[in-house]
Image (tube, rainbow, N blue to C red; front, side, top):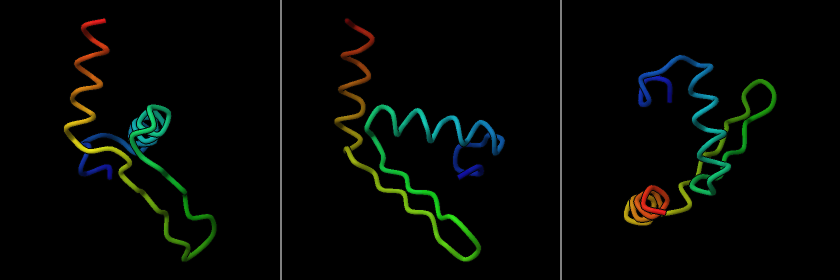
Amino acid sequence: LETVFATSRRNTSNVIKMLHDYGWISWTPGRGRGKASTLKVMISMHQALYRQAFTEVS
């Protein structure tokens, strides 16, 4: 994800937390060696753009 967001590991963690707080993603970190993390996108791109535009207009 660091490469996708083109940010540092620390900033990527902040972005993931922010998106999770918005309810846009579901993030479950894998704890321990060999445990994969799961990331689920909870809303469509259309919904995300609509919500962002509505927030900026309000």
